Length: 201
Image (cartoon, rainbow, N blue to C red):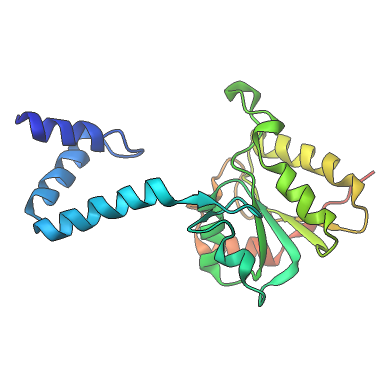
C-alpha cells in the first residue's frame, strides 16, 4: 500500500466507529473528489477544530462566546434541560418539541473512569438557576448506572432551590440506552411524559 494512502487510512481509522475497511473506503472516495472539494473539506475541519468554542452559559458548541440557543429570546427561559453531551442536545432539538434552554454537563459521574462531579459543568447549571428565571429543570441523561449516580448528585445539589420543579424524561428510553442513539419519536414521548422527581427532602 502507498505510504500516503496508509497514513490517511491510519488517521481516519482513529475516528470513533471507523474501522480500517471504512477508512480505506473513505480515503478512496476522497481521492476521487475534485481538488477544490477536498480543500473545502480540510479547511472546514481545520476551522472547526481551531475556532469552535464552548458557550459560556450552557456549554454547547458555538462559534461565539454565547450560542444561538442562549441568545434566542423567543425560547422559554423558565425551563432548563440538562443533558450529558452536545449530541444529546442536538437529538432533542431535532424533535422540535422543546423550546427551553439547556445545560450540557459534558458527561456523567463515573468513578471507574475517573470522572468526578468537579469534572462536569454542574456549576453552569447552578449559576443559571441562581439568576431566578428558571422554574423547571428537566434532567435528560442516559438511563445507566452512571446516569442514575449523576441524577442523585444533581438532586442533592438542587435542594437549595426549593422553588424549582425538577423533572426527568420518561423512561420509555430503556435502561442503558444512550440518548444520542434514541429515535426522535421516543425522545418526544419521553419529554412529553416527563415526571416530577418526588424525593427532594
